[in-house]
Image 1: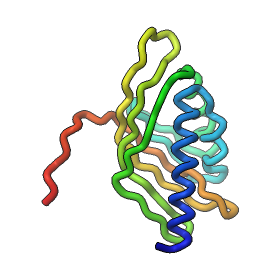
Image 2: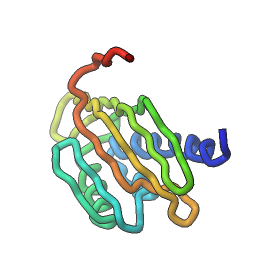
Image 3: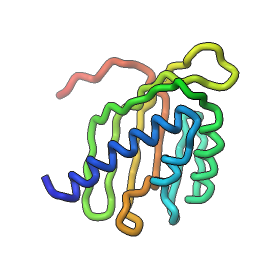
Length: 142
């Protein structure tokens, strides 16, 4: 395993911590690892998208305001890799979130693809695609 891959694996731990803060209403750790340069995009679970580094960061901040403390999330990484200045992970993000205006936690189970690039030597999130996980059944491996 190269130093580059180990570096990305360490970064993914920080990325998951940013996700935990986000679902607790704090967008700042996610903002710290989000792209500052274009291109950057966010394909939301609602089916829409946001384009441009500044607009994506603003969207994350606005959306994080929907969550309250007491939410929990974790990643189930199916694949991840890095090469040069690009990296990715794909998998599942499973969460029980507390939304403002709701009495009980709401399950959020998402399929995730995230792409990162190095900016000034640091990994930055440049693309997040999140959509609803429809079933827990896995296809048979061939």
